[in-house]
Amino acid sequence: MAKVLQVNMPDGSQWQVPAQKIAEDRAAWYARRYADAHNGAGYDYRYKAELEQSLADDDTLIEWTENNRDWDDLDAVQTLSATRRITPISGSTPRKK
Image (tube, rainbow, N blue to C red; front, side, top):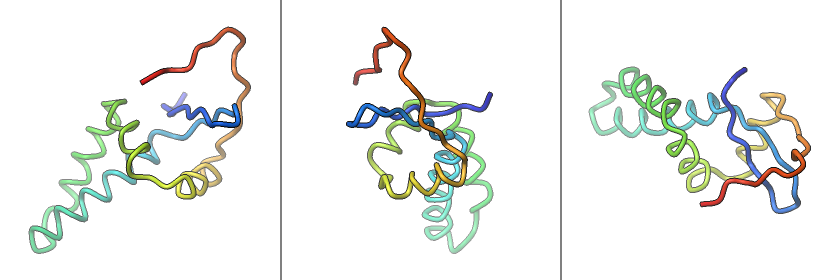
């Protein structure tokens, strides 16, 4: 099963967002900034490094999603990734920060 970030919405719904899509978005953003600062060089290197780091660190994915993504952006990813609404498991406790 692919790694997902579960998002609990204020209406009580829960969505699973593919971690790969979040990591790709983050990696592309950092790679563009790196390449811009280095006269266009190093995009591929930086993209790969950022993608690997993002997928290895759940806190990085959560921070990126909370602070750098608009929910409209995630809606598009969810639609493209066949994200589905899931029903909470009885007795489960959501993660608290």
